[in-house]
Image (cartoon, rainbow, N blue to C red; front, side, top):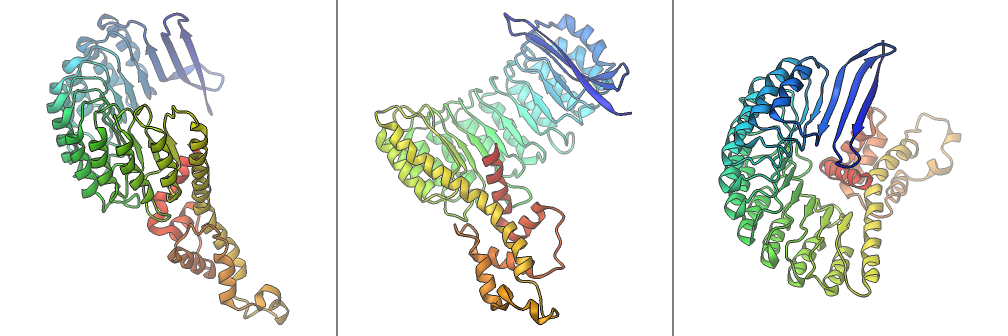
Amino acid sequence: MGLGARHQMTQSRHTGSHALVHCAQADNMAPMGLYALELCQLGLSDKKCAWLGSVLETQPYLQLLSLRDNHIGHTGIRRLISPLARGCRKLSVLDLSGNMLQSQGVRILAQFLVTSGQGLETLDVSSNGVTAIGARDLANVLVPEFNLSLKHLNLNMNQLEGSGCEAMGRMLVQNQTLEVLTLSQNNMFDNGCQALFFGLESNTTLKSLDISGNFISHVGARSIQTYLQSSSTHTPTDNQPGLQSLNVSANSLGDEGIDVLCGGLSTNRHLIDLIANNVDVTDNGMQHVCKVLKAGAVNTPSLLTLSLRHNYRLTRNSYAQLAEASKANHNILRIAADLQFEGWDEVWTKVEMILIRNTVYAMERYRVPLLMVARGRILLRDITHSTSANSTGIYSLPIELRRMILIALDKHNVLTRTQHISALNIACNPANHFSTKQELLAAVLANDYAFVHEMIKTVHS
């Protein structure tokens, strides 16, 4: 019997509070159970959690539970954890943001992760008054010995400070599953940033890190530079690449901090997304950014997206330099900026044309290998055992000339010579079979495949 799905939703027009319920159900039968439950901004208190726990205990199909923006404290979460452990074995997303858990509540969640939360992949406890004590309790269980499932952790707008971030750094040394870590607005300061990136140097699984709004200066930026330089041997082709996305917005980096950061980017080959909004950069700092952009050659992994919004001290001259530097960059696909000067549209049009060009290059790096192999199967096939009549037309041309015709398909020169040869060799050998386009691309692009894959994802996102 097939499974269908239905959902019901009630919402307050004035407060924005809502209850959203998704039900898994068998065709023409009563619901089998909930698979998503959102009870947001409803004023749920610790007392009401006892009733909610009795409901959750009977929901074996529940995968997503959102209780954000309520009044749940450590007593309430204690009343929910046991029913969740007994009844919600498939829970993968738990959103408790905007409550009053504090460190006591996080300690209860940490125990849950060890005993019953082995399927949980996303945990959001942002804006809960969590201190360094709670951060340590959570960090102590996010190691292979206790938890191997959590991939996304959100600790935004808490009070971790330097010691809490130090605990997170120690956790990153051992953790092998976490992919997204959000620590914005936690009073991290430079010492917390240094401790975090010291631990990150030993981590190869984290892909996205948000440390925005943490009073980080050029001193803390040096630890980021050290990490980027130490991990420069990692590329997106590794099975366990380094950090791919970094948000340093709303920190007092200034020109000196941007200079330090760009020093790490000049040798780094795995960070592809940098968000540096509102970092107090001026025209002097933009010169360092432009140097990084100029280094983005055709076949060198480098930044794909760059955001410099809300940097109001940048002038027309900075953006003119940005447009000029972007000409030499064949990888950058997105640039976000606020242009507030007369004639801004003329400058931005130049940037947009470059981004369009690079988008075409990105699509060509995906299309050309497939086209070369497909046409090469025909142009380079062995006709020695065919009749003489078949040795006419294009097949009468020397094999080298036919290979040159195929290479000419790469009219923008987006592939390397080695990749050209690889595509031609695959086309010549009928024994080479690939079940998917991705397998074929990986065979042709080799070490560049993962980077091209990220480019295509950026284009389509």
